[in-house]
Image 1: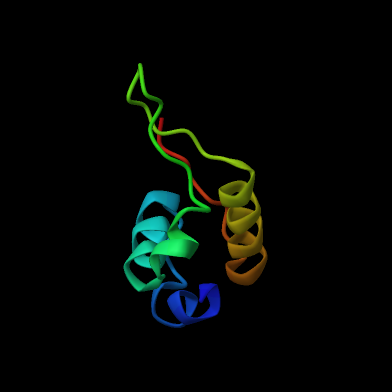
Image 2: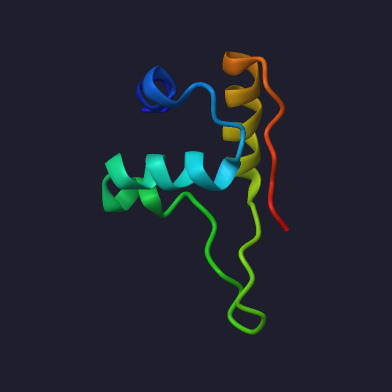
Length: 69
């Protein structure tokens, strides 16, 4: 699926946009691999799966992924 998103959005370096694109095409079981919001602070934090996806995207695109804080 990452390759599919890369085929039309390879120029993007904002992980939030990449993540939204992936979530829009994945089934509900696959969506569970992504992080969720912290129950108290409500802040989204990347997990190991997302960091690995970001590394793969960086390798594919040659661009550094930006994580918004």
